[in-house]
Length: 352
Image (cartoon, rainbow, N blue to C red; front, side, top):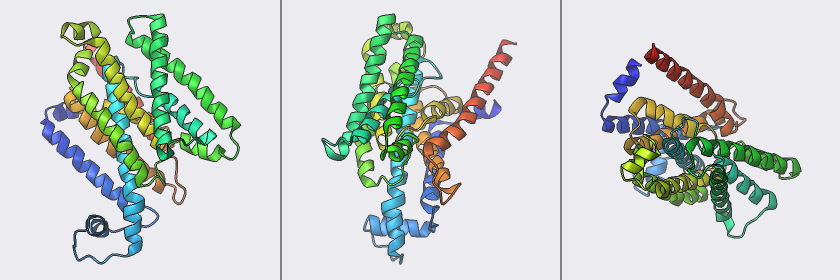
């Protein structure tokens, strides 16, 4: 409690500085350690001298250059964007719906995106090459979100937050059954589909980094433009309307931007849970609920968190690489349980 209060008193620029510094250290560790350990100086020369073409006089082996530039660096960058995308989407869903359990999974968006991506893998669809997977993944995520909103409207025209979440959970369970059906019908594709569903950022390379960047930028910018409206939504939709917020228009805009981020992340990495649920809670607890800083800090912390989880996934049981979705669930579940327990204890003390 005292630690949290102290962090809340820290200026915002210090929070950014600490977060960025932590992420930089994690990134260096992630590139340094693996099946072959690479010295930090070699990483520096490989990126600056060989990657950027700036002569530094370093003498490094071509094998190390290959590992750094074509294996670990693109993997780390892809993981950064996936972690940031999921964390921002979770922060936006939680802020909009004022519910700590809201995230891309509980709203069914992740399951919808996953179903579209698995369908592409299962039927081997490729009408626009490498872009087929993210496009279908995002479209299926959008369709799922529209289905959730449509069904919620049938029940309650005001689209109350509780009904949206309940409908999302129902939709997520329904789509999960279809995913299980695809796995049951898979034969030669079985291992590929299961591995993809458990989440992975391995063997993706630079093309996947290029795929996620435009979707990340567009979703992030849209949500940043809605940061004041997200702050207003924290006090309820009626209050937000009194404050001049166009509730329905902004709600669709925020849901759409969060779906872009979720769909593109799922398309390049499979289903990775708990990042969108845990990271915004951590950031909100330490540095407060203002979405002007909550969104970018969630992006930075989420990026570092997922890179750290990926480092654990590929080193803790080496030479076997664990699915990153399994690691995030194993570590994220106890963290989230502790946060709920801590919040409950604080509430009880406040009521006494």
